[in-house]
Length: 221
Length: 175
Image (cartoon, rainbow over all chains, first blue to last red; front, side):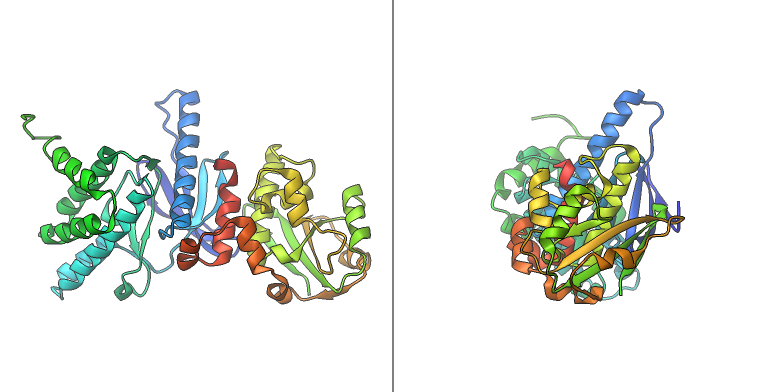
């Protein structure tokens, strides 16, 4: 592939950076799962790509920052998106703030902004499906806390508090396991989420219930 | 005067744009375009925000042409169709193609590297003034673009008009 540089290889896709029609772009190539039946694989790949593109457009229409879709190629199972140049992931940002021991109150503001963003996304009945701190970017300059959501490959549309609760639960697990001592941060995130989202009550309730399920949890009550 | 861009995914093709203002023979040009006697896609510049918009449409059209999966019958018709946010072909032509009363025309050509295209020949068929591409923003009807592409007010806060337009163009067939 011309001029594209491999940036990262996940379980789902290979991500490249390069120029597309003169613009900084990210190209995501879905990795074919050969253990699947080919007909199923084709259908699933296509559906996931369509979901990703649809979700990105849905986000933007609602004013939620997400990359622009430049081109969707169903033949090579690739999607060309806007590259948020010089951005860093929230994951890297939190790590660097914690490592340098600097002012952690800025992290609380970051958490509030994240809570607000996710509330708006869930109010659009959009479930991200893979919420982690590496799927939220900070545009330069970092201090502005200008967030951008990325990687909607596992996203779907749902109004159910269960799905929204699980979405938040996934983020909580990812958050607390990747970033030690961030319980206060996540609490602030949820507080702002509850304050911003009109439908948050049932969602938070479900989140509490979902927490009681899962690995190493006793299924009583 | 004109501008040419190579398509990264199709290195043997490049896209050339020619812009004309004070056009007097739009009706005749439109007829020629319908008959297929003029080379290129004839587009209404009022609907174009930036040449990037054309490149995205051309890229998609060339891709579908190569795959034999175009929705229209010719590559140039497909470029016009790709610009439109709607899946209705005749609507696309009405809004993005030129109409008899237009005074400005944008001509888009997709050329093979080996083939030599005579730009002067095409330009001579237009009764108008060829102008540089950077005059395009002056010809854009921003309000009309927002309306046709249904750009929401919330979106305007986080996005440029070009980005909103391009996103809709590329996700049109997925919706």
